[in-house]
Image (cartoon, rainbow, N blue to C red; front, side, top):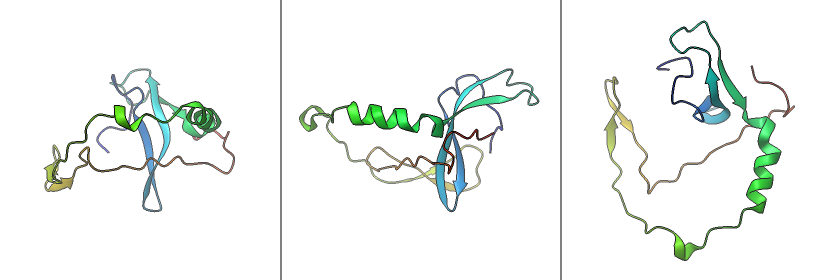
Length: 113
């Protein structure tokens, strides 16, 4: 973890947890009182609270017309050097698919923190 708090420009960024070898989205950065002082809390939105709303929006949103989609460009997969890391990291390029997993708690309205 590079920094354990939300900072300027982080709003909307993911709060993820590694649960049984899968990265799961559990929150979105909302705001923090002062990112220079780690004793102040960072506030994250509880994603599970909005699952019903997201499902409804997705259900009401028509699928895009395949003919109006941007042309796909093939990019070669390559190893990337992450800043401050001693070795190569795997990078995702636009031609790869990433899955977003929404984590549902047994009590979906439960606060995470």
